[in-house]
Picture 1: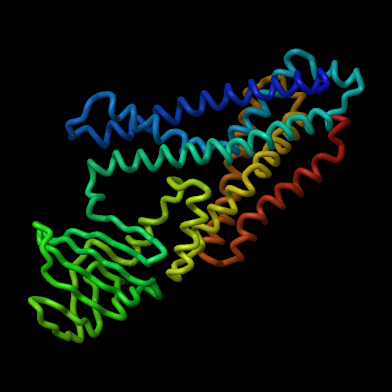
Picture 2 (picture 1 turned 135 degrees about the horizontal axis):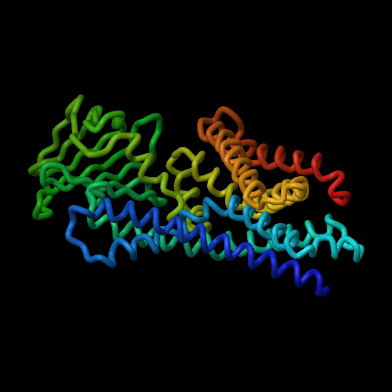
Length: 357
């Protein structure tokens, strides 16, 4: 490795770790305030909210990485400007494009590390966080899992335990369902079998229900079952994909597909992870262009403010396309790829005179 490559890489890494540490600290403090507010009326130790915040912070910072890379690149160039190192490199024949290539390469390598190691670690910590916090909520009533054997739900209503197994979900209906209802001593009360259950509301409408109770079978045309679930709640239970590692997402997608469950959110998450390193590289290039076009401004605050301003615009720009994908207004892959391609085009148009800056 050439000396200047190693030197510039170290400066970029120092900027990245510095900005990441600051952002992680801010996220931790904000999350801690939220946890303290949540537990203010509950009897828990002082350390417990801190512990939960530590577990949750890595997942939150993952979403911030594109903007961390943008700001890190700004600090990288501010360091070069302040030490006149950019001018020295230029007089030595090192072009700006070469410096950009080094920064982009470091960003890409960090992106690979983030999605292969950091993301999986943060998802495991998030899962542990949710498990611990569920002990202080009513989430034990809202347990659901999707396996190759279909959808499984555990519910508790009026001291009765309800176990539901359905082959799949179609148009807000459970298909081919088997329901077992137990008393609080976990003794069987009744079994209900149905080919279709309307779950639009929390009071499920079971058509042509076959009810088995006290060794007798009864058929009821319209049987109502009170639950804590409706279609939207079931959907939301599986929307916290940040608690799943990449391999778990792939496995869950297979189960979703076998259930005929919507794949939109999980596909967006998978594509987002795959394209993440490229997103980070584009943010690095974009930030580099901003910095080299604002060299005339002596104040670093002005440069960083511009970066934060464009960060907000890019965030809403990407979020706009994501919403279009989630609502199926545009093709799913297009919702992720299109903003990346547009950002790449903007970078390409602005980079033409990059070496003259």
